[in-house]
Structure formats: structure tokens, C-alpha cells
Figure (tube, protein in one colour):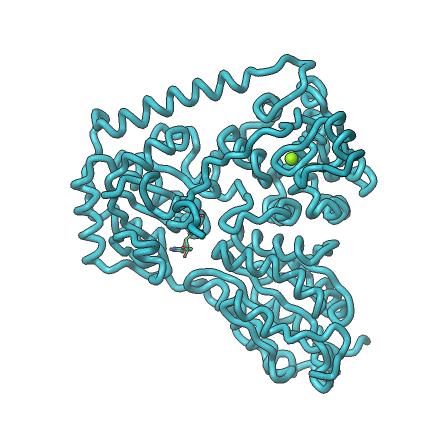
Length: 565
Ligand code: ADP
Ligand code: MG
């Protein structure tokens, strides 16, 4: 019989706490932990870089509503995983990093991969700890899992000293003796009834009310309460990028195609799990009216009145607070309301414009974003698709082209605008949604950050469809002639990447399938073949015209003014 060890205690604790999947990379001293977890029936997905593993755990936390768990070695492993910790914390997603660390009697001696990991993680976590004994590991893990999911979700860290992992346990019952009961789901709380009255009054008197839905509402699974409130009150809504799909993008009250008008003209805005950060232009004019009044539903009291916004604070759990608001019997906005009509006519006009753009380019023409996305959209089934997106123009344009109809079916670079999350997110999404197709639409530069995770996905038999939108560069690149000339006189722009890089061949080399698509016709064939592939990872290298040396501009950029030196 195998010896009973600290690893088995850790595995038993994770199992008891309801952990089904771990994302990570093993090495000394955590191989035994991963093996004990596999023995205990927990799925272990082994990555090629801790960054991607940690990004996957963070997205898994968002999708499941329970902390995603990442397991790494110490030192460099933790430094790489910090990328995912910060991403989780900034996005308010629950995740727990467990990492091996040096033996307790070698601390400070320059031990193997030694780092003060608690100190390194502390600034970016809600809780970071080094258990003081083997017996306290179950307590530390439960506290980390609970803390990451309760209140505003975020990241937590638990150090696993090598000597605790390897400790021999004589008495099998010891594991039971030190165990901690499984964490109950996060408590749900209600907003102050007085604030509910004030919010209802403000919405009642509004001439141009707007509901902004954020990814906090998606995380809180508020779709049915939101639908009830919106359809009863007839108030138009705007989803932030990751809140798309809580109500369908084709819902008649969706203002996405009239975003600027909606922001500028709204007089009372109900923010539902969305922060007034850069994504919402800080709530400031000129993007918003300078007399706009905000009502904010959020679990975090400190979020209220951010950036100078005057806010009616509804602090509580989103679905519960939406129920409270629904009971305050809001009047129905008449269909004749001027703001509503303006929104609807703007949406209509912009949808027409987008349809005209989509028609660009015949079957054999060099593609651009619009013709490539149009071709992809035509091939995709209308249901059970999860979009993952990263990149600059690729993500911006794809966001408006691809409608989302179901909640939590779109993952992107999010609040931290992180490039390199795509592969980790796509892997997490496929693990969570085994019966949906994950369609990852990524820029060529963004994809390069984590390309080796193709091997991870292929090994795990995940039939991701990865569409690398290849324009030879960051933002945009050069055509082959321009590239060769600049390269020969050592004046390549910093944004340039090698033209015609065969990302599709990397997929094949990793055990997946790859296609090169240079026009609509080739893309159509590749999409059909990829959609028919169910047992391995697919990558289509979608070559589009490089933008050359055109000026860069992005609609989301908000500047407060020129710096004065
Ligand atoms: P977006 O980027 O879509 O605007 P944000 O990440 O900025 O979304 O905002 C999400 C907000 O949702 C955070 O402020 C977070 O505190 C909040 N939140 C998360 N879960 C809940 C919940 N269960 N109830 C209320 N608010 C929540
Ligand atoms: Mg590019």
C-alpha cells in the first residue's frame, strides 16, 4: 500500500471543498499533490506556462461562480502565475493559487526556487497565507476558497511548503480529524430599502433612463431578474463587452449599436455590476451628459461614488437587489418616449451600415476584418457558441460583429486589457462547457503570447476553434515588400511581425489541425472542416490585409487632457 502523505491531505481537502478541476504545471515539490488530486478524481489540466494556467483558473472562476484553482511550483512558477492572480483580482473573479515552496527549515538559506511568495502575492490578493503546520492546511485552503468567493470576488494564495507536502501521515484517520467542513455558498444581501426608494424615484422621473449591465451581473447569474426588470420597465440596456448575452444582443431594447448616443443622452443610469472605469469612460463628460445621475448595484460599498460620480448606492447581491427594484413598481417607459425612439432609429441605421460593410470583398479577394468576420459568422451555428476574443482591432471589431445570445458566453481581455489570455480562457471555457463550441477570435500578436498552449488543448482533446486574424503585426503590420525593405535597412517598426507566419502549422505540430485561409472561399472550407472536427484542437490562420503605416485610433480611449511639462 502507498504511504499516506501531506499530498493526500491536500487532495482530500480540495475534494471536500468541491474542487473538480485544477489548472497548473507540476514540478518539484507539487508533482505528488497533482498525482494525489488525480487519484482523488480531480481533473488536472497541465499547461506549458503558469501564466496561461492561472488565466484559465481565473476564467473558470468567472464561469462557474466558484474559485478556479491553479497549482504551480514556487519561485518562478508563482511569478508567472502572478499574471493570472492580478487578472483575477482586477476582474473581480474568484481564484486560488496553490504553490509549492521551500522546506520550512530552509527559509532564508537560498533554497531551491525560494521566494517569499506570500509577500509577492499579498498586494494582489484578498488573502495570502503560509500554513504554520500540516494540520492547518485544510483550514488555510478553505479560508482561501471562501475568501476568494465571498463579498467582491478576487484572488487568494496558499503556500504549500515542501516538507508539509511530503510529510508522512501514520494514521489515515488524521486526514478526517483535521478536515474543515465544505464552504457554504456566498451569503446574499439586500440593499438599503431607503436607497431602493430613492433609486425607484430617480428612474420614475427619468426622461432617458438607461441600464448598463456589467460582467458582475453575468458572474452573479442575474439574467432572469434583469430580463424581468427590463421588459417590465421598457428601459433600454447597454451590456459591457463581457455582459453581452445576459439578454440577447438582438433584443429590441439592446442599445449596443447606438452606444455613443445612449451614453451621451441618458439622464438616469442604473449600473448593474459594472464599474465606472475606463471601459465606461469614468462616467465623465463628454462621453456622458454632465448632469447624468447614476444608481449603482454592486456588492462592494467602496465602489460607490467612484471618480466623482454622484451615485444612489444599492449595495448588495445583484439578483436580490433587482428583485427589490422590481417590487418598487416602476412605470413602463412608453414606446413613444423620445430617447427610446432615438435609440431605436440609431440602432437601425447602424445595423444597416454594418450589414453593408459585411458584404465587402468577393470570394477570391484579400480579406479585411469585416469580410473575414462576415464569412466566419455565416458558418457558425446560431446556438451553443462561446466566444473568446483578444487583440486590438480584432477584439474591438469582433465584439460588434458577433452577437451573443446566452449569458457567460463571451470572454475577452476584460478590465485589465490583458493580451495572452486567449488560450487559457478558451481551455477553461471548453472544460466548463463540454457541449458548446469555443470560438476564439484572436489577433496574431495576442495569440503569440500563449501559442504553445495549443499542445495543452490538443492533449486534453479540446475541440477549440482558434481563428488567428493575421495582419502581420501588433495593431497592424506591413506587407511583405515593405517588411523586407525595412528589415534589410534595420528600420522595422516596433509593431511588425514576420509576414505569413504559419500559425496553422504550429497547431498541426502540436497534434491539432490547421488551415491557412487567404480569402473567403478558403475560409469557408476551413470553417466547415473545423466545425466537423470534434476530437482535437483546430486553428485557422486567417490572413487579412496588413494595415500598413496608418494612424492608430481607438474609440475607447479617453484622455483627460494633454500632460503639461
Ligand atoms: P464590466 O467590466 O463589465 O463593467 P466590472 O468588472 O467593472 O464589469 O464590474 C463588475 C462589478 O460587479 C464589480 O464591481 C463587482 O464588485 C461586482 N459584483 C460581482 N459579483 C457581484 C454580486 N454577486 N452582486 C453584486 N455585485 C457584484
Ligand atoms: Mg495583428
